[in-house]
Length: 254
Image (cartoon, rainbow, N blue to C red):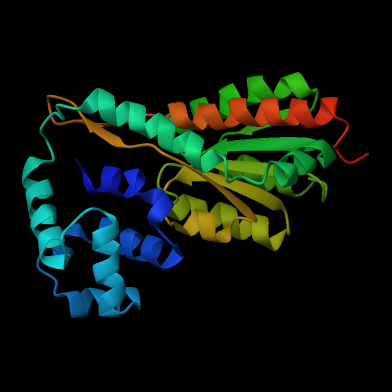
């Protein structure tokens, strides 16, 4: 089982400090393989005890056991997981578990109040999610627009109303491209919601509201890594149903 899967499978046990530690490790795995607990604590602004508790939450005996796992993960990263179907089922289950925490009243109110809803995906697969989300959200009779690049973002920001809503779909939530976009959104004081995987990231930190889903990396027999985006589709399908429920009960703002 890969490190990301360990984090996702135990996500309900993790607090904000744990997510910060996890994010650092995910982006510094080669260094962490030989890093002392005191060094990791310094880099993550945490205590030795917090690091130890974090590793225990992930199912390790302690920090030494955790480091051994990191070394093993690097050696095995290109091997096909024998329990890939179990991991896939767990990924879907994790997504539904986290989506129960979403403040759907807030999100559906924002959708109801919006004149236009903009969708943006940071890559090809993410853009496909945006296009499918457009199809889903069109059923609520709103103006739904998919944005394809930073240039289009700049064009719409100059004429977007204060009530307009932006969804940004990303896998990692980390890229120079996203920095440009989020800076523009914050400069224009536009409300935007991030949708990323279950880990702390820059996009989620900058967003007015963030949605997390579970998307584990699956390694094919030729060593190519593959990430599923089914969990992203699940969120938008769930959002539509929550919106419809509130509309039927006349709970949406009027």
